[in-house]
Amino acid sequence: MRTPDVMLALILDMAKKNENVRLVGMNGSRENPAVLKDRFQDFDIVYVVRDMKPFLENREWIHALGELVILQTPEEMTLFPPSLDRWFTFLMQFTDGNRIDLMLIPLLDLEKYLRADSQTVILLDKDHVAGHIPPPSDKKYWVKIPSEQEYIDCCNEFWWLVLYVDKGIRRKELLYASAHLKNGIWNELLRMLSWKAGIVHGFIFSPGKEYKYIKQYISSDEWNQLCLIMNTGSIELCAGALEIAIRLFSDVSKIVAEKLDFFYPDYEEKVLKYRRKLEEA
Image 1 (cartoon, rainbow, N blue to C red):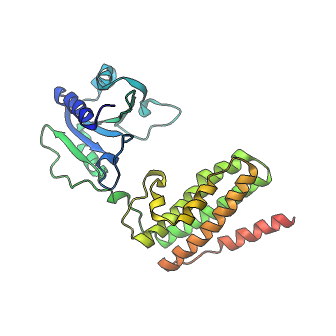
Image 2: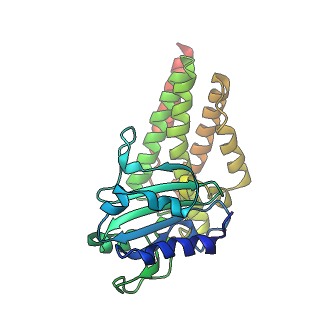
Image 3: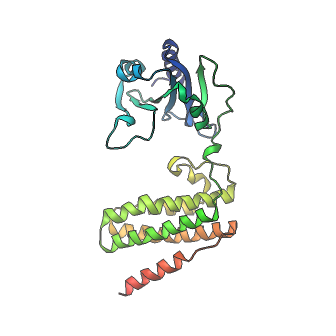
């Protein structure tokens, strides 16, 4: 596997030799001082260019970066609509284990790019146009203190989705029940746990993408319950996961309400009463 120094030298050498490239930036976890470095980290690279067409029309330059396992260009996909406007990304996984996510940005959008991420480091600036860039920080991604309305919305969404999962379980529709557990219940539970973690540790940390660092900020009991909720391979397991999620969300959301002096809505009381009514029917 090529070392980070070798990869960066390759990326910069290509940019230096191409007059079309005016600035090179790097973002992402490699520039996050709070993230432990490992061999799985991507190189999130930006080429700010005068003209994107040469990169798009003739793509032989990609092979100079290494032997590919697979390439993805999100802006050209139809199944998954692109999220960028005039920007274009090449996601490249190489056979030696390295990965480069290379984004092309037109020079006209330089200021927009420089404002977009607090973890930007300028690697090359041919025209000295970037100015002063603050040291990289993940502060933009820290857990934020919720407003009372955001807290209530989270509670509303969780308890609304409880009834979706409950319906799927009663109908024995495993995929339906499991999907709403994993894609809905899960998100709101983690959101609430991150707010509680912020209360305990201070709102000065990032839980990471998909809350991948949340384990560091919650209790071992909370973590163990989360692990049980992930097991949804049968209707019985879904039913058990839902009950665990309900208890955990109830406990955590009440703590958050108390500590932040928020109104605790009556969603829980009414939803649980409705579920008992269904049991008796």
